[in-house]
Length: 130
Image (cartoon, rainbow, N blue to C red; front, side, top):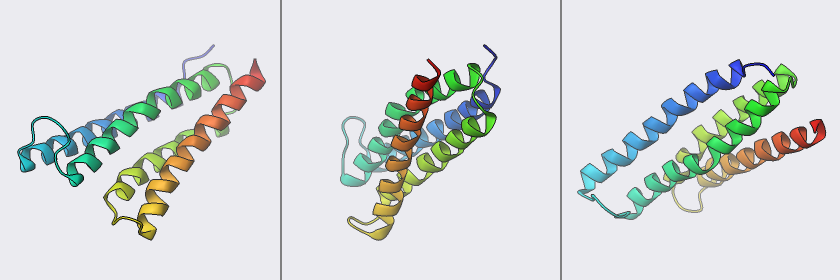
C-alpha cells in the first residue's frame, strides 16, 4: 500500500469547504438569533447542506483513499475526487435556489446524483479489486 497523496490533498480541500459550510450555518444562526434548532427555512437549508456534506464526504473519501492506496489508476482516483468536489460545491447552491426551479434541480439534484455516482463507482472498483 502507498500513501494516498491525491486523496489527502482533496481531503484538505474538502475540510476547508466543510469549515466554510459550518461558518455559513453559524452566520445564519447569528443573524436569525437561533442558537438551537433549525429556525426558519433558510437556516434549515444551511444546516442540511452542512449535514449532508458530513454524511457523505467521509465515506466517499475513505473509499477513494482505499482505491488509491491499493494502486488504482491515478486517473480514476483524480476523476472521482474532482467529480465529488464539483458535486459538493453544487449541492449548497441548489439548496438556496427557489423551490422547484431549474437551478434547484440542476445543482441540488445534480450534486447528489454525482455524489451517489462517485460512491457507486468507487464501491464497484473496490469490489473488483478484492
